[in-house]
Image 1 (cartoon, rainbow, N blue to C red):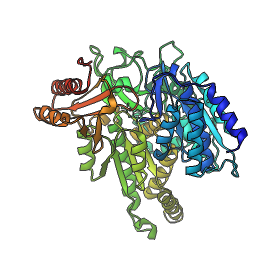
Image 2 (tube, rainbow, N blue to C red):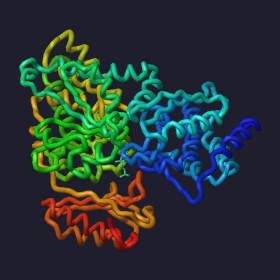
Image 3 (cartoon, rainbow, N blue to C red):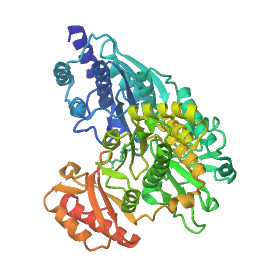
Image 4 (tube, helix red, strand yellow):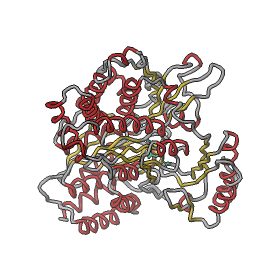
Length: 560
Ligand code: G16
């Protein structure tokens, strides 16, 4: 690294001192903390993004968001060239950069890493980074910190894409690196045209059944509602009403949004007894999560929740059906292809959903929490469907499989145009364009759910009856040091601190159909507790007992 570059880095880093006594780590979804302490972290992630772009000689994304967390929090994460999460190999470097005590130490780390990774500072391409942020008030100044970090690597270029949903930024990075149209309008056009294609392939008699009545969406007072207002104008055959779009004065994620709805199992602000029976959905703060719900009765705020597991099940049913139609008939050699369909869940998946998916004959795999793990696993299949129960997920199609379906479609258009097989091929191709291939995306997920419900003629109630969820409860416990909890086996077993897993086992064994686990959150300073049992009372009681154990082993002596 030449002297000019070194002195630019030293000078700019000295303008972003690290806050006293703060240690951050690149957690489940990047760095997250109270926005007031994030300036230096975001500046340093700007440098990291520029280096990643130089290393890969590709466009990289940098998103400022704390997604489902409270409005005073913020965060930063990187989208790799594929549009997916930052490679896990670089996470330790991200941690080291974020926690370097001063500008000189930071410079030393950067020089060492450039050498180790062989990063071409004067390569063919200079660094190019797309920047996005959600609607948080702290976003603008944090984005400026990121920009200054990027600029401190000579020749780097940053493009501010404005306020976006997280999945939009990931989609743009992917599209740009593939050399295809990548503007926000292109995103909306791709979603709306593939949705239209799926709707056009629905048999006429089913369309008349009128299942696609109005969908009412809770926008979490965040960016998702605002974007859905634009997208809905480009759709035919689907009416959407957006509430909590942020314009009504509500606070981001406060009593609203997918995380609140899924965890509390009550309807969000802006919904009420007058909504009994209608189909509703809820996005989270940056629109990468989606859950559906209905309001069963006028006398209670409880909801009928249709979570990520049920979305996964609906998608799996539909894809499986299309694959089976496509493999029927002996029109040519191409139909011999055996597509591998894989399902990926986490320990939070309701036990009833896993049983249901296995009964369908599907291969179900488990990973730790975090899209970065699920996505990686799903990418091993021809078609990989992954979802977290919290509504974060998507369907991945391999290039090889898509190539095969394209060829099969071409073959069928000359041999059996308009046949059921050809329609199945066209549907699979449309799904691969509609559903975000970079990351879980509430807007694209929502359109796919709507198209499938219309295709199979199901109401939200019919969908919700696919299987009966086992009652569950999630709690969080504040502890002295959450990193003291170390887990294994896709977070289902605790290996540290000693003795706690045995205590959890003993407690869980007292409950019929009991299952429980604990894990440190990667986005909040808490330990998460999950419990499942045969009744709601039992699940609540098990969760409370486990929370008390956590408190006893690790806490301050008072569980919340
Ligand atoms: C992020 C991750 C999700 C994860 C969630 C909660 O979601 O992308 O994969 O499930 O955090 O993580 P934890 O339990 O570790 O706090 P989001 O929507 O906040 O980006």
